[in-house]
Length: 67
Image (cartoon, rainbow, N blue to C red; front, side, top):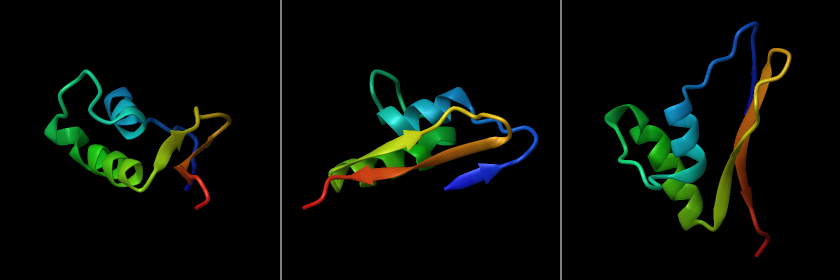
């Protein structure tokens, strides 16, 4: 997904949960959707990726190995 705007902010907790899942931290209700996305992608053999925002654009998505 491509996000464009003059000011893009992704909360660090949500970013971490999207990319790492639960990890060493408890999942808060606020990050529950990000945890669900990470879990679904991981169970399908993929990985969530999130770019750093640059010049008003950010990209995030999931990558999977070909079967």
